[in-house]
Amino acid sequence: MAHAELTLPEGAAADWTVPQDWAAYTPDEHAMWDRLFERQAAMLPGRVVPEFLDGLDILRMTKPGIPDFAELSERLMKRTGWQVVAVPGLVPDRVFFEHLANRRFVAGRFIRKPEQIDYLQEPDIFHDVFGHVPLLTHPAFADYMQAYGEGGLRADHMGAIDHLARLYWYTVEFGLMRRGDDLRLYGAGIVSSFGESVFALDDASPNRIGFDLERLMRTEYRIDDYQQSYFVIDSFEDLLRRTSDVDFGPIYRALEGASDLAPDAVLAEDRVYHRGTQDHARAKMAC
Image (cartoon, rainbow, N blue to C red; front, top):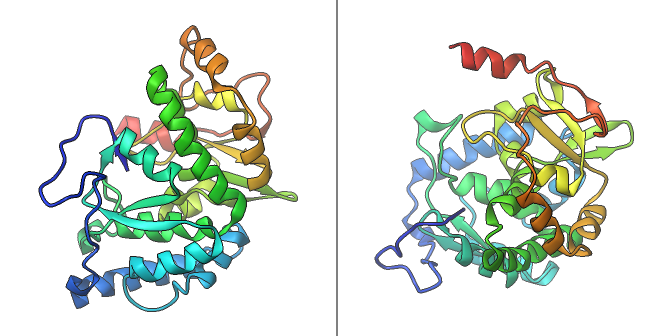
């Protein structure tokens, strides 16, 4: 939800929040939420980490209609001390980090149109709330998100936001987790997408590579299509430990002198769960 160059919209507070105005949603908008929810809820069991499904239950998100942020926040506060706050759309980087650092998750309040059911460029309420909020009930992941916000404020002072953004992209948005011999989804960009929920686990095209902080922060990503590589963590606790117990200053300085890696790159030192064919990306480029 972050972006560097934005102007405060009319009617927004200084922290860019706005009222959700839940009562203003139309029956068609609630029906779109229910349609999206039913489709994802039917296909995610056995594919997503169980902590995500637990979060849906804890937050009672199986209730029909677009969730009321006040109700979600009340349940989240009791569980992990988080809140959900509405914003008009994308927010500046520093505003985004400040909200996360104070355990506030910013969510857009609009929902996609029927013709956008499978893809839209700007995150809507389904992506933000269905995709992100359930895992905020998990203590380690909730702590990771706060730590990311705090790290973002430090990165802002060091001119290193672009590298740190890749960490968010490849974990919070498009991360996979190892469970025994299998992989499971947890990234919000995947679990809120019908097509990518299948592609990320089942398709032969993308790489699936073990998490390595510096390697990941060198890796470019796709914003216009499915990812060419996914990074795999062992647990939320391990992700928190491997990021919050690290001094990022030396990493940023090392990255300044290192070349970026292409989204499809596989290195000799990578822990490779699956080396992708990249057929999907090649087919897209050929069009």
